[in-house]
Image 1 (cartoon, rainbow over the protein chains, first blue to last red):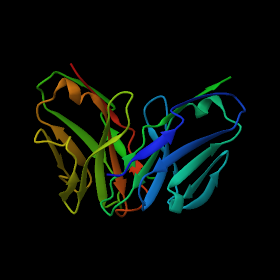
Image 2 (cartoon, each protein chain N blue to C red):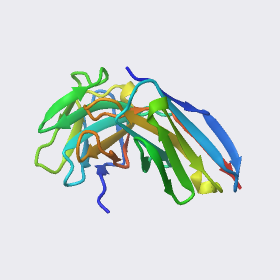
Image 3 (tube, rainbow over the protein chains, first blue to last red):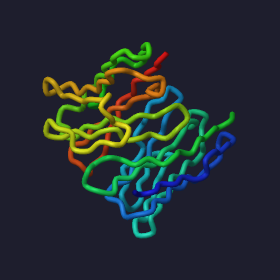
Length: 109
Length: 113
């Protein structure tokens, strides 16, 4: 089956710093989503981005489907950005998402 | 904004007991899923449900698990005889179509003691 790898596994930032999280996948995909899992365990939708670039406030994402990777950019990080960031891909018509193992981000004040 | 609602948020149960986790998906969604996340690990697919039947299930989804959409609004996951290793966060999700954006509920944290 498809492999989804995220890097780095852990990241510690000072408040105000920028960061880039990466998601590599081993096969062509129909859909890619980025999620933020907050300290209460909720999965918050960030981006639905099978290809191209999207921006939402301080966050943006780019997926280059032909090269099988996606990037999540966080600018001017805040302590509330802390948590685990997951990418998940859908690579067949069945609809299920395959998740990466996540990047755990900790933003220090 | 429509959202996926799960109940309860946290359930503690004794090993061997049956549990039912409940979900109310977004009303116009047609595809429904259960995922689970063991503490500290990634989110894993359990089962997908479309047109009132299971469309796909993972190896985890054995005979102890079942799903149902009894009344057109609720979507339930039943574990017949819970084991310690069933302790996890369980997420319900829905999609309008099979390859569109998935929306997740807030999760049910199941603890088996």
